[in-house]
Length: 252
Image (tube, rainbow, N blue to C red; front, side, top):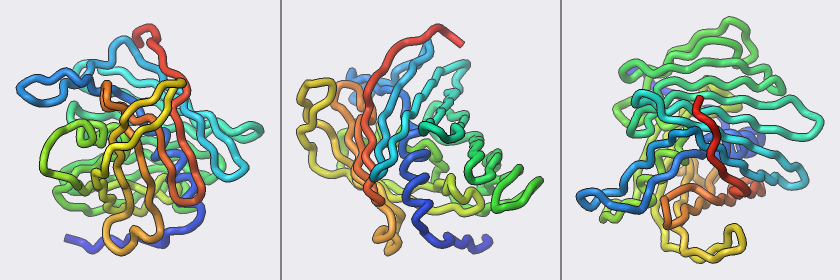
């Protein structure tokens, strides 16, 4: 297996990694009802729409997420908007276990228009990235899951009652898609937070780059008890994310 370089963890990673991955990738609910002692996955049909508010120091973003389950595949779309700037768009296909099958990001601010697909233990990237047009790259990983939209996959982990309190997975840096990294999620004690004017005891997760690199980037994430859905985050780089609205839309 080829050795994979993690690359430098820079300021831009702390911001867009927080804003895009941490927000653009937040979507489906897991009902609290249990089947054979396990959380029941909610079928996202008709399409669900979520609106998140993202604050990064003095900058503010609006992130609208839409997702639907069609024929056993979750289709995900995210549009991150900042006043006076071009939108950042992310699309993904996920399997029923929330693993990423395909991911695309269009970021005019960073000259990125990339498509990534996993085949076996290789992620194939094509498009514009790393300041090159018509670029191609193969990233060799291991058996761990590729969870680009990891807030979605971590909802099941947050809702599950078990002795297992940590998990690791692969993720691409959306600001530098040619770099992959292993992230680690650790389950912490539940905390009382307020959402929509109501208090709730939410499950807290600590997500960071695995190993000693956790000192460069990490964040705290909260998941509501009713359905395991991601609702709030405080992340390195003075970034705050919060769910502000959710509604059903017509079918795709």
